Length: 268
Image 1 (cartoon, rainbow, N blue to C red):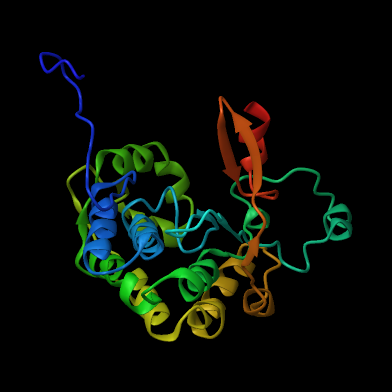
Image 2: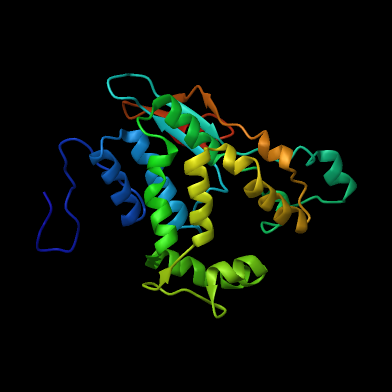
């Protein structure tokens, strides 16, 4: 029992479902989807999409998606690997010819073809009740109309200010008069809203083919990347068999490599 004479947080209890994320707006989106008839997977994708807007330093539609999902009434655990692959041209021979033996974290060569959007679509088609058009609406609204910057994001942006200033596009998008936004300032991303709206309308294809993909490829290639529009068009996400281990009488389920779940199992 919590000692109410001391600072702390009470246990959260609910009858039918709950959501936990790193941001209240993301958690709210998930709960609203559940209350609107969606299942846990619909809520998870909606929450993740909101995080792509309100915590862009942590996640984004340009990233990956690993998912473990236990359908209601089933003992099965569904695993999804939505991690992106390197461009087809990024071979070991190419790097050796260029004399590249280590990769700078800011290099375009560390950028893989994003797998998250393809994974969201596949997960919803197989196990969701709603489509991308419905679950992306909270994220679209926040990107279009803005949201207050929260403390975690403000802190991360402040510590990364020099990196953000180093690229003309990130400087325009994420800095204001050359400074990182402070907690409480309203941040709007109309371009991201337009991209999310295109995905909601046209599905993952709208992201991986056409003008959105062409824009991403052009930016990466301007920085020296090897990415092509064909790499984006060929992006995949696949259902995989989860790996399992035991820990203190519990079964622990993780995504297999190339996910990092094996590390958790090794520690179990």
